Image 1 (cartoon, rainbow, N blue to C red):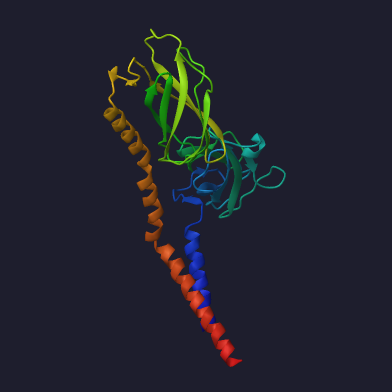
Image 2: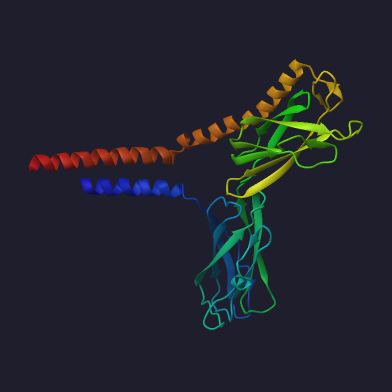
Length: 333
């Protein structure tokens, strides 16, 4: 009896863990999508892929289930995957699958086939749902039917915000905040070559890792090439490594001007006081911190899921029963 209880608890834990599996599956319950003269009814019935969500720059495995719901067989069932950005196949030959022997496909009535593909996701893929198309027919003719699938792609990149914190003589101090969703690794801040400004001495500084919501300060000694120029846009280059190990570079712009009092002037051509600069810094910090409560909320949501507590209770119960069994055996000895 005790062994049966232990087996039940183990199965309960495995069932709860399976809920957390990093995969996605979608079922389609529409009527048969294609009819041939031989009464073959070919339909795409489900799609599954993993991991979920998919990361840019990595591979995703895709399984597509097709069913012949008719009473007759197909003469030469052919399936063609049509990938477009951000998806691609290592070889175009992998896109076509003709089922059967030596190019002669045959799906018997009420039979099921599962097609498997391995797709590469572009490193610059956009976050969100991205479509991919499957074309198919029953006789390898030019009469193709089509089915669209969506694959969810995660965001591996991040974003930055910056303000000029202080200007003293020829030195400008800049605050840089990671306002995106992800951590930025090995951050380097540079001042690239530009029309109206040039650096004196070093043109780049290592910041290191910058968590989302965090900020750092850098400073450059710069010279205005043309003080009379109307364009006071200062370009700052931020190089970083994203969540998938891809090295990326973004250019941010900030309006800059210095006067005899060595204070910074921002858009609107209005001189900022020390209090106003502090207020701007607080505003920038608020932008960065905005993601932390959201992250904490997402982390806390797991404790509200039924399967989490089912796993905890199951582990405790199995441990307790195991302890009792071992203790009982020792007493018998």
